Length: 267
Image 1 (tube, helix red, strand yellow):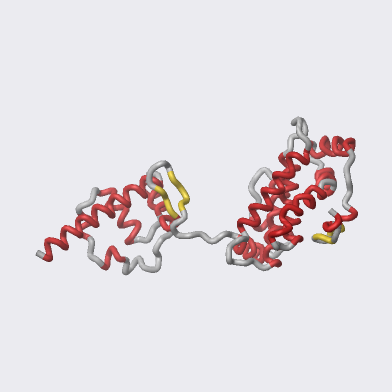
Image 2: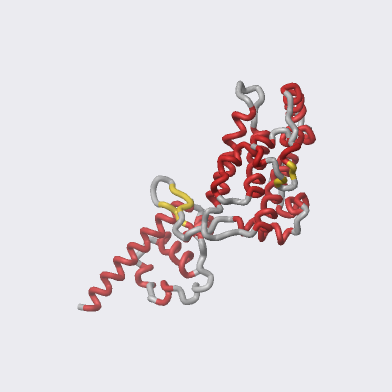
């Protein structure tokens, strides 16, 4: 532990307070009554739990300040979700939460894309500000409210939060109802090429005419007008999963029709 008695995120870890059992009991009653000062005191009194967890991740080569901040987020979540009436010590509940938060951070930052320290700090401030506002408000805080709470310009905050997002593949699944899987690419409209889309360029009117009216309408909305499956589902009043299945069936039917047409032409 002595190696961790240093300045971390502006906190001198050698002077961290320790809470007695009586203080903990008193603070919990105040926390449950909505006393934010009591909550802050309880968090500060348990920062040593974060330090004890950090020792488990000393070999990852990550910045100690970053891991400490992430661990503090796990600690705050533990305080907000812990039930003192349960027959379990707070540390027993909090340590797995802190470990899980740090592991998620390490997993999310393990890609080849490295985010600058300043952007991460800005994003963390925004996350903490959102959590604080969520406890005070009954509605989801807006980005403007979060930026004001964190004392960060809105554009800087949005840029930092966007940079922290993990990149997605077009083939990442986003929905599965036990049948056809819906992928990211199914949610992207093709505005750029809707005038010279491949459907038009191949003159597929004949193939479209062979489809049932609803399937033909879906294909025209998707590939002629460049609408997403969500937009199509809303327009024709069916589920997005149904749109996906009908679209796939229609494309297969058109492919078979065109294949047969090609064969007839070659003969």
